[in-house]
Amino acid sequence: MLITIDDVLTTEELAEARTLLAEAEWVSGKVTAGIQAATVKNNLQIPEESPHLFRLRQLVLGALNRNAMFFTAALPLKILPPFFNRYGGDSNHYGFHTDNAMRGMPDGSGYVRADVSATLFFSEPEDYDGGLLTVDDTFGRHGLKLKAGSMVVYPSSSIHEVSPVTRGERIACFMFMQSMVRDAGQRRMLYDLDMALLDLREEIGETEPVVRMTGIYHNLLRRWADS
Image (tube, rainbow, N blue to C red):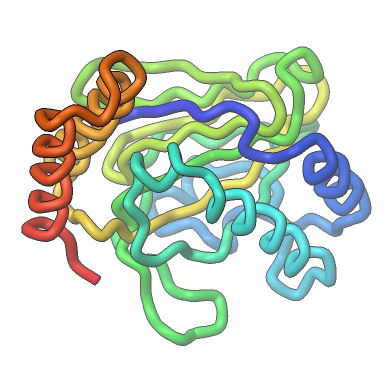
């Protein structure tokens, strides 16, 4: 299931984040790549010791916590602290790869199972050429280049790439979530049911059938979710 969400960040949050990103130092993105991914990864990343990283993560996590669409799509149980990357110049692409299933917490406190991945864009599409995020899933191959402040959410099991940036810079945040619902098919059914319920409430209100269907959604979530 691949979902795009517009305006995750407010105008003020996006402006603050861009200021911090412009001031940040950058190192090779291979520091967080697995063995296979490291062979095709050529970008830059903000290191853990960066003084700007804490505030950047605060901005992103705060935006996610208030976003209902993100919650229903990912059903997050744990969110690995977000990372920030930059593509441009000689460090401009990330070939096809799959994300590691288990991601270590930066502070060494444990692991997060990567069920859901997301990319939050900070650069406007017209500010760079190339840099297309391509995701392969069961419904085919999807190419994405979203406006700044928007985000794409997709299964971490998907094979994906970022094509070479040939002009300008592509700056984004990438993150991994462990979902309350481990099975991607079950997450998709819950998402579709939740979206259908939203449409029905707008069309016919809180009728008895809508209330019953809402009960079905929550009973399925109780059956399938871990906490």
